[in-house]
Structure formats: C-alpha cells, structure tokens
Amino acid sequence: MKNIDDIIERYLNDGLSTTELTEFKQLLETDKALETKVKQELMIKMALEAHEKDAFKQQLKGLKQHKIIPLKNNRKRQWLSIAAAIALLLIPAFQFFQHSNTQIASQYYEKDESIASQLLSPDEAQSPYNLAMNAYRNENYSLASEQLLAIKNNARATYTLGHTYYLSKNYQKGIEQFKAVIKSQNPEYLEKAEWYLLLSLLKMNQTNGEFHTLLAGIIDKNGVYRESAKAIQAKLSSNWRFK
Amino acid sequence: MSIFRKINPPKGCDLKYTSTQIVAAYAHPAQLELIANQVVGDLFLCQYFKNQVTWFVKNNGGKLEDVEDFIQESLFIVKKNLLSHAFKGADLTSYTIGIARNSWLNIIKKKKKIPLVDIGDDQKAAYVISNIKEPTPNQEEWRIIQEEENNKSKYLLTILKDCLSDKQIKLLSSKYIQKLSYVEIAAELHYKSADAAKNAAMDARKKIKNCIQQNPRYSDLLASFNV
View 1 (spheres, chains in turn brown, cyan):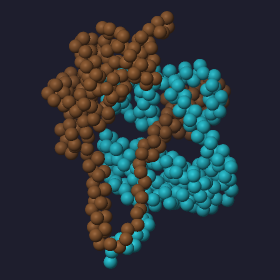
View 2 (cartoon, rainbow over the protein chains, first blue to last red; view 1 turned 30 degrees about the vertical axis):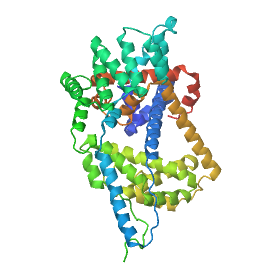
View 3 (spheres, rainbow over the protein chains, first blue to last red; view 1 turned 120 degrees about the horizontal axis):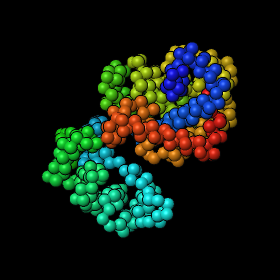
View 4 (cartoon, rainbow over the protein chains, first blue to last red; view 1 turned 45 degrees about the vertical axis):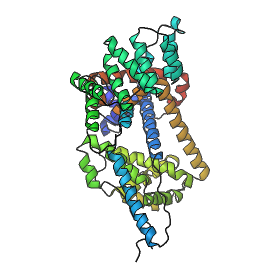
C-alpha cells in the first residue's frame, strides 16, 4: 500500500474499494501499530465532528421558535396584525443586509493566540511577561494589562496590550497601543498592528480619513489581511446598512 | 370571510430556498454555507418537520425529551450533506424527514442489530420502520445509550480543547470536516499562504497525536474504539 495516511483517511470516510478494504482489514488484524494509528485518526475525526456538532447546536439554540397568538375577529386588529406581520418579515431582510461598523469589526476580529504561546524560559516563569501571557490566555485581561504595562519599550508587549484593551472593550486605549507598535516599525508586529488598529477604529466608529488611508494601505500592501480588508471595504460601501 | 378565521396546520415547511436553488448554489461555494445555514434554520423552525419527527421517535422507543436533541442531530447531517453536495435535489422536507428516520434507525440498530437502510432513501426507510419486527430499546436502555453518546462527545471535546488552541481546532475543522482547500483556509484564518496553512495543519495533527499518546487518561477511550 503506497500512502498509508491516504488509505487510512479513505478507510475512515468509507472511500476504499472492496478489494482495498479486505486487504486493509487483514493488515489491521496483524499490525497493532497500524490499528493504534487508525484508532487515533478516528478519535481525532470524531472529536472534530463533536466540536462541529456542538457549535452547530449552539447556533440553532439562538433561533427562537415563533409563537402563535390567537386573534379576535376584529377588523382593526386584523390590519394591525398585517402591518406587524409585514414589519416582522422585513426585520430579517434588513438584518440580513445590515452591517454596522461595530458588527463588521467583531466579525473580523480574532484573538491572536500565537502571542500567548511565546513564553519565556521556565526560570523566568514569574516575569511580568509570562504572567501577562498566562493571564491573556486565561482571559483575565485586567491582570494581563497590569503586567504588560510594567514592560517598557517592547513591541510584543505593546501589541499584546492592544489586544487586552480591545478584548476588555477599552477600544480607545487599544488604538493607542496599536499606534505605538506601528510607530516602532517593528517588522514582526507592524502588519498585525495595522490590521487590529483598523478593526479598533471601526469598532469606535472612527471611520474618518485616517481609517480610509489605513484601509487602502492594507489593501495595497498585498499582505495576509488584504482579502479581509477588501471585504470590509465592500461592506462599508454597501447601501443596505446602518452606520 | 376573514383570512384569520381558520388556521390549518401547515403541511410543509416555509423554506426560503428551493431544492433547485440549493443545488445551483453548489457552483458558488462562497454562498453555499450561508444558504445551508438558512435552510437548516428554516427547517429547525418548521413545525411540520418537528411534528413528523416527534411522532416517529415517540412511536419507535424514544421519549419527548429526546426529540429536540435528535432534531438537531438530524439537521447537522442535512447541513453536512448540503455542504458536501450529497443532496441531489429531492423535496427538501421529505429528504430531511428521511434523514431523521434513518438516523433513528441507526441508533436503534446499534442496540438491536436491525438491518440498515441507505441514508436519504425516504420510502425505503418508511417501509422498514413500519415493518420493524424486533423490539426497540426500552426507556432505560435508551437513556443509557444517550448518556454514553453524550459523555463520549463531551470527552472528545475536552481532548480537543486540552490539546489544541482555538485557532488550531478551527484549522483542523475547516480542513477535515468542512473540507475546505488550504487556499480557502489561508484566506479565512489569515495564514500567509496555502502552504503556511498546510504546515500549521500538520503541526496541529502532530500535536494532538502526541497529546493523546502522552496522556494516560485518553488511553481507555482510545482502546474503546472499534476499527
């Protein structure tokens, strides 16, 4: 068998031919290491499916069941009901097209997990940086901010501080931190800081000249965030939205 | 005569997309997920679908409390089938009811070895259901099956969260469950390139495998899998 990983994947997705299946099952009976490997793959597959299913169920729970309210045979009430029904029908239509600035920002903001995994060596476990990163990972943003403020002249700390402020809804302070990172011109965090500054400005409804210059700059740069920035630009220019 | 005088229970579901429109959307992957979400949302709110499934489950060994969860399970399969283009354009309500019936038969089969029917074959499923000769699980047996399934799901979720970051879970889900290409994943999850996304996915797989191997708590669960 040529590529065992491919065969295992097809086996778990019922994609093997009858001959391949017989051959593979025989191999499974004799090769314990292979059996363990297949079990691991199956476990990962089922875990991912359980995760998808869980997310799907949460999504469905968000939908409210319509209630049927009996109406009296009253002409005035009937017209009111028709008007209400039309309004109810229009609400989802408007919601579908509506993208407020703050909603767009939330849609594109994603917590940067990569910074939290960059811990210092174990003998520096109690350093403000490590304490801050652990707090950030555990979503204790006030503690994370406190520790990060103690670190001076460090682009990574300033960048993380921008996120902790954003995540604790202190967007204006977040904007200041992301701007400071951009000013430092640290190549490792520059692109990210620009992107998150854009989202923070959007969150604060500060879609002035500075915002549009930044947006155009991200699109022109052709970097990681180009497509997302273009999508935001398209949404902002849509007529079907509330500011 | 007033239009409000008599309200008959609806016979079908109020769906915003027809089967033809859904199949046509297969050519537009960017819109498909949005449409699939709308379809399952409409079906979830459809009283006719709920009544059919409730009647069926209650008459085949289930309890009323099981129905809500079971409906969600069935709709999850429907969404997966829409995203993987497995739905070929039959009447969507009947198709979904067929999926629910087959899923229920699968559950019963696990316990009682009832012959399986193909998923989506509504008429065949209905025939088998009406001709079930073997007893369905009793209430206690059903409770145990459900509890085992729920515990297993919860445990599997714990493993994922223990071993991987949120972004890594999203990455593997996008690749192996939603079957997105690395190009699509890179755009969605902000990786610099498709190769970067592929490397990250390989790292995440290695990480979870090591995590399973190194954690004795997971060995019992691993041993319980039949392959």
